[in-house]
Image 1 (cartoon, rainbow, N blue to C red):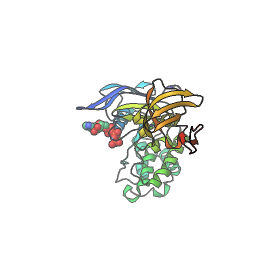
Image 2 (cartoon, protein in one colour; image 1 turned 60 degrees about the vertical axis):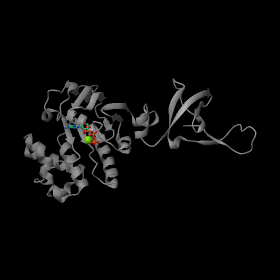
Image 3 (cartoon, protein in one colour; image 1 turned 45 degrees about the vertical axis):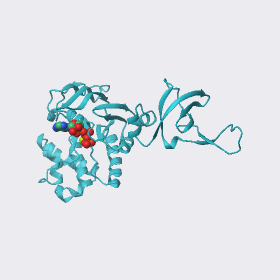
Image 4 (tube, protein in one colour; image 1 turned 90 degrees about the vertical axis):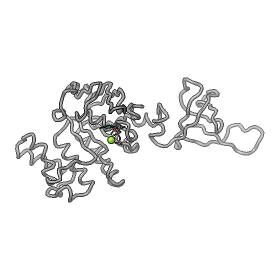
Length: 307
Ligand SMILES: Nc1ncnc2c1ncn2[C@@H]1O[C@H](COP(=O)(O)OP(=O)(O)OP(=O)(O)O)[C@@H](O)[C@H]1O
Ligand SMILES: [Mg+2]
């Protein structure tokens, strides 16, 4: 695989469950070493897409390529990907050490090398002290790290993570978010990260695909999605904002002057292609300023000069 080849390509993938169209002609391309998130509300198709990339489910239509190769006919265990499930899926009868070593033993890696690699990955995730314990004897956050260790030790090209921090409390979640991001940078593995938490996606991702009803509504860098949402759904799903119907009155040197139900607003930004549109106003972008001319009165009025 040359360095320009995307790690994952999904082309016009559709998956139906009876009448439900879980994925509707999804196309996206994920770069090597990218931290890519699938973000969207419950039922929008995130897990289904991840399972199809992993080879755990089969698309009705479309192609999945991994490292440039068509993977449609490649069984899950032969794909260079590993999955971390929300439920951890650890073997309850094996201790932490053996859980992590399991994949290497299956591959018949030499025992000396197994010892070395398990030690290394446990040190990286700071779980060495739990080695002899069973999964039932460690906390949720510790289980999560063991699940990650077990996935990372196989040195996959791509790691698929389905809401991996979903079961954790807020403090641990924040801590593990940072650790995950650092780990991804250090190892250079492509991460495909499923979450319905917009803040988590914004903090972690290089790029995000915002999904709704089996489709990708918008795909881009966090900053672009936040500042230039293309649809109402994306604007509402990523952070809080108010929506106002607007009619363009005219443009001036500072931007647009727009008629809205709450009065005239001065809006920074490019001239829209239509005269009627919806304004998405992020609260932190609002600036209050004294009106420049206030005909016939002394009281001060304020207008919004940037939204
Ligand atoms: N095996 C299945 N049989 C029937 N319908 C299914 C099956 N798996 C998923 N679906 C449906 O497909 C749609 C997408 O489901 P999916 O699990 O991908 O959503 P999700 O985005 O992962 O949601 P969540 O955030 O709740 O995990 C949903 O409407 C779901 O009910
Ligand atoms: Mg899911």
